[in-house]
Amino acid sequence: MSNTSFWGFRDPFQLDSSLFFPDSLAAPVNVSIRDLKGSSAVVTWDIPDGEPVIGFAITQQKKDVRMLRFIQEVNTTTQSCALWDLEADTDYIVHVQSISISGPSPLSEPLQFKTPKEAETQASKSKDEVTMEEVGQNAQLRAAELIIIVVVLIMWAGVIALFCRQYDIIKDNEPNNNKDKAKNSSECSTPEHPSGGLLRSKV
Image 1: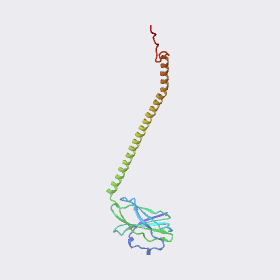
Image 2: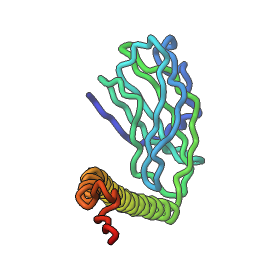
Image 3: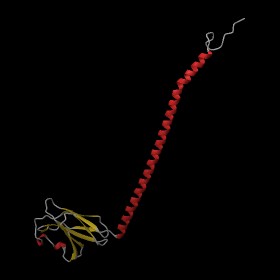
């Protein structure tokens, strides 16, 4: 893979497809910027289906400044490229071209973007760090709450199991108590006095 980057003084707005060899290769579409920071960004694009692309070329320049940077890579099918050494709070314009064996495509539609200020970048970074810290704290709190709930459920299960065991013991002892009562009652009873004791004979 070959990577070429240099600064020149050509104005990309004055470049058109007539300066390049092929006009059958379609220009990249859906050019966009992501991961935008004060000093860097990533440009992405799509290639129309069926295009025999073997690389890309990017022109990057500051708005209202004729000097531009030219980035070229071949032997690759990637559809993104990092832009570096950007200045914060600055407007930039980029164009993308596809490269085939026969040459480059026409320029894509120009994409203009503005890098954020350093203070905004730092604030965004700090906000992201705080957000991640809050997420970590919330996760820890949820884990602690979950542990407490599990412990309470286990305790309740133990109490219920103990109650059921005591209830079964009491229930099993009830027939034995009834038998003992019936036995004691039969021992105290006589034919003369079913309820117990002997009748005294009258003199």
